[in-house]
Length: 171
Image (cartoon, rainbow, N blue to C red; front, side, top):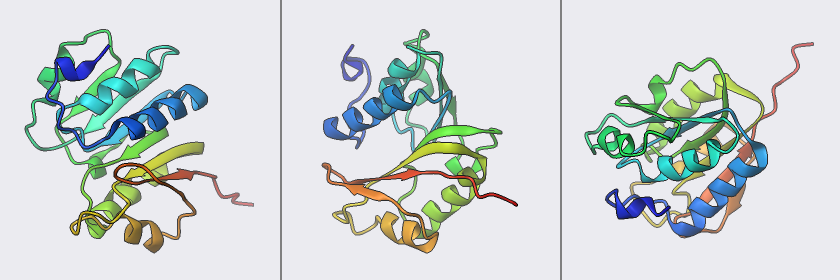
């Protein structure tokens, strides 16, 4: 299905990036998926389309009124919950996969990292969006560096970085 036929398609996740994200979900089969920066809900629909294949669920966060809840409601078969809150308000007990695409300034990304990362399961996959530096207001790489995260930068239309979470042993 082409969700952009039903939802305003000015979300910034490009086709090459959607493919990478959807392929990752197919590979890892995460049960709890978090997206920050819902915007109109277009990317969330694509992620949920894959997640429904195996019983996963997308939780997407954005405090701004872009009608994501109305847009997503057109597809009741998709496993999506829309929260009209900031991504750093996420209180899910466990997260298996995340797409951090909310705010793009360093301090805002740090706030989302600090809220989401303690909830990550071992082996959880996290993608950061807008890492290529084309937008002067985006400083996602500085937040990644500030938290000393080992990521793989992937060349895409807007740039994404992939992180695999490993729990630290308390022994």
